[in-house]
Image (cartoon, rainbow, N blue to C red):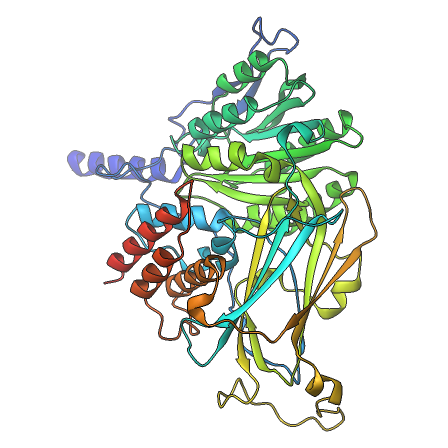
Length: 537
């Protein structure tokens, strides 16, 4: 009997420990700041944090046995008949997080969740050789038309935007606030240790005229390093090195503090930005997506931009971080290894940190005499109503220096036998195609609205597109490679619109359009497509 009671007690204690309810783990003190000769102006602060529940690991992979990652549901856009819906309106997107996250899954020999695959972020992970803007325009617009590789009777429209290049030395002084998650959930090697290495790379790129403050949050928020000149890299690096993880996650409190510090050190005509690095697991104070988004929306009016960097696996809150970046006039990247940290924080630092145009929207009007139906590939959570295009109060995406943005439309040409979706004839509306449309040689018109970073009134760019289809073998590498990546995304999502596409076709097309590929990113994409093909067998 005693033996049975003892066994039950052991089992009960194990269950409580797994649930994080046991009192066996004592409360910890996690040092947020330490006073050193390099940071003598920093006081000593200690923060009481809640006990961390132990986490069970698999012995072979040392990965958590549970997964609480969160992704927003994606409902793919279907074909729309031009006679009923001639306008397509959306916000541009320069986020790249989805591609790096997909790579992380494939490198773990797992196919990613369908909702982790945002096709526009896969396409925009890569840079494309678009022409530089002319005159004083912040970006150029390029269009190309050719065959659709996964649906031979359809066509593909490629829209490319290129932000003006700005040399690093010409970038205005930056007022940066690093908002770093040091809670217990950040303790694994792919989180805080990788975060520290990545931010050290960024610090090495700072100019003497730049300033950096470091704020952290766990059970509470605090200042590790007050705003410090980029000339004093020793102090900044020392503060980063001393960071430790532990406790719960008061993310909203950290956001409030970071924006306050950024506002106190605001540089007029400079680059003012909060860089949030986290796994997104906010669990103390304001934590719902809606409340956090509303908090960020209030802060963006101060002229302070936001960059969100995601780290880690197992409890990545992807949907939360994407929304924060979108509503905070910023961008979202996922860092799965040190090379990705170098890409985001060193190679693309100008585009990551310096915005040249904000609230950038695209509105495309299709000519019903040339196009029967169209489908925007990706951008599902960036769709805007047609009225939003002219509404300067409506938030949209940002373009950084040197950024390229690519969007693809799959279209069904006029006269095609393909039925895009039948609706009843309209009783009160005129459905007859105008004579001007029939006589025009334009297939569509692309309009863009944007605001200079310091202005609140938008400017308009109009780009008519002639009906001039190139044979697919004469299409540019830009066109072909973006089509390969789009096809790859549709296969990962098992899209109903993937047509007769296959991984072997994606690989073949990507190899033929790899181009110079100086950084090797396109070669890596081909390898990932090969992995996906093998995992799908």
